[in-house]
Length: 384
Picture: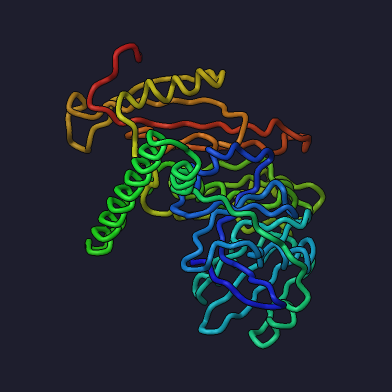
């Protein structure tokens, strides 16, 4: 839940969901991502032009003058710094920066004592130049040194567009159109309120994670520095709920390697990191044949895929009574989060892998090798 602090005549907001992009996607894609995450606004800060935040203000007025506490604190602390800020009540706010000064995954979040211990373990392999533990009574001293980091907010919902349309359009027909849009929006709000009431009254249950949520957890776990104490990240792969990282010695000793299993006579190290996808999915699957839709999406992107099928049966069950599993394997040359995974019914991501550095420690093509699987009762026509 986003929190706000008043200091120095400015309003500072914290606990947002940050994404770093090589190229920031179009607005409609950002709004779609905001809806998938269940947030109200997309936020940008000119200090970090390639970063985008997704935020729900939770009662904080969406007005001008809001500033990002995490971005301002990162600018104050500088690169390669790990800082825990005690907020009292066994809560800790975290800011961690990389060598480029950008926020690392896990930053700008409030953790309980138990969650903080887990996050420390997650970031234990990052070689920070400085580690800070700021007590609650010293927080105001840091706030007094912050420079403004203004946020530009864009609503995820297009409700504001409906209201402006009613004001801008002229004439009786235009007024009618504006009123119709407004009433349509009211009906949508009523529907959403009913859904929210039903959700709150329903018995709590843990929903199965969608493929997009699984991928988010995988990439967050894989956001490790490529070089650590004389060890280079050669490759990594996510399968199930575990990230497997293959490290190669690049001048360091085995005692400096990340925690893991020895490989290649001490010249390699295999680290395993568990991750937990967020439950639920934020986008309903589309109607139609998901296998054909998914392969068509790859073809439009110029991606060649290998498609296969097999029968999977429960133990003791005849294979003819099993379920047909269709596998699709391909190489994706960009950020895999650009794919709207949750729109494809019955899709599961079986494996995501990436080679970061080749065996000779030279740089490598930073594409992703992906294998997905669809469960289906019958094999669709045309797939062999």
